[in-house]
Image (cartoon, rainbow, N blue to C red; front, top):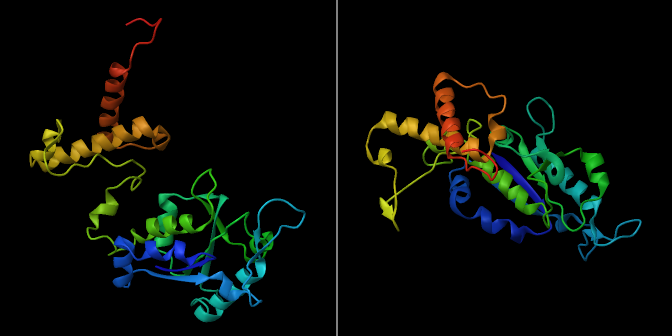
Length: 263
């Protein structure tokens, strides 16, 4: 997985890329991330990359020219893909974009083109960048951040960990939240008791089948209680349907009786 991050603030990005799994993935040659300072693609000696908005208003707007020049330079540097198309896939984090999901991350993890992230800042990017480059607009959620650097890092992190070989244990990605549209089951480690809170006995039993069923039940329970929308329209196999029916019945019994309702 190969990425370029175009930003006015490289110092927001580089420290994260040099830590933990992202660092090891780069050392293994499984991930390549180059951070490009957009000020290096400006025209003037003061390296001005933003200006006041036409029509007035608060804040500053990132200029189009440095971004166009940066993308042109990347196209020239990386050339074309085998089919003759430009070997870049340009993404722009923005609240207006398509929601970022685990499936989206999985798609990026398998991408053979370079992923180029345009990181906006201030009041945003000159609209002509969107019109001229037609980037994929992607959103982490219905909220606004100070810039696109943090979303770019989140997207790279989520996708890179799905690249084969990045995680130390390949089972990790297969059994975590959203791997099959379910939330993850609870995790425990030593010691077996902390402040009176104990580890479920089944996890200490060594009974692999019982542990598998417990984990599946807890994944379904967590999804049913926290994100029931993920279960909507899902086709369940016989075991999952049985476990979910048990969870629904247990939840109904445990529901508190409101004032005015019969017990």
